[in-house]
Length: 130
Image 1 (cartoon, rainbow, N blue to C red):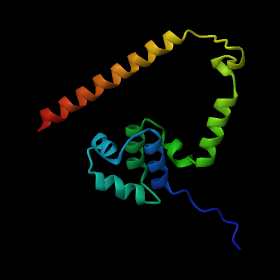
Image 2 (cartoon, one colour):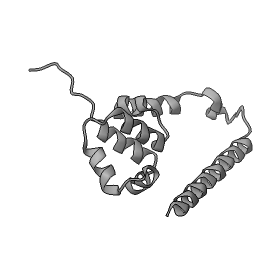
Image 3 (cartoon, rainbow, N blue to C red):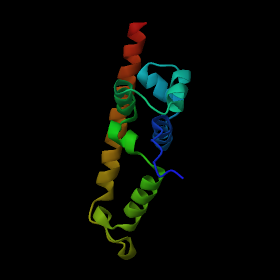
Image 4 (cartoon, rainbow, N blue to C red):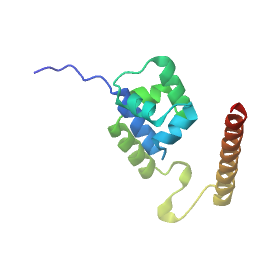
């Protein structure tokens, strides 16, 4: 019986992170200028060269280290810790809050508007190249 640990399957990690971010293979492919089949092939590979991994990490909005060290167990622990801690979210048992929820809504809206602007600029760039 071997005690050696199995190496991480980087392609599978990419797939899970992509899914957690609510992104389809087609969207990742478009962001990277590849085909959906190419993304499918990448996600099927156990190892990916560092240059390609950096491109994928940028498209997913995560670090290469996050992809390399991703595990389902860590995600469960993270979300459990997040849910159980009071942190900046106040004590929900007392219905107290130490931030203005409207400020958070405005902040989220501004980020969504910025993302839409960036998407629009990206599509314009693609159309000009054709």
